[in-house]
Length: 203
Image (cartoon, rainbow, N blue to C red):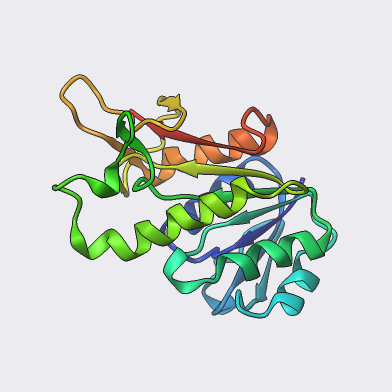
């Protein structure tokens, strides 16, 4: 596929880029500093501004799918979604957050006492982004929430998928590596199973 990756130089963005390359896709890697994008086969680095709707839409046009891997605190959800819609690209996959996942009926992770205060602004904007997507009628979107802890690790290809509830292991831990998160999202790109839905991934 021809894929536009917004935020290609971040922690998750670099793993997504590597996963896309390994599977033979053609990627437009969009970043504020395209010179930081590693030179790889099939990768074209482009400078993009997520606050410039018209400019971003022009960059996105002609692709089969857009993947957004940018911090919610650094973007305006409406501007980003409108840019994707204006571009005419049929699919939009979003690197989501864990804060909006449920830990009990009616209780989100972000509302638990143990949720770090420093992460609340980003997690809150992530929840708002998801709510905006859920109100979209004309966009084929997917929002993938990681587990509570996401960090550098191994690409094992072995993980579980869930819906709106936080995934935990037998010891109560909730984690996923950047590498396996990338596998799950690119699997979804290639074989869509969560159209207009949020899902999650964890060990």
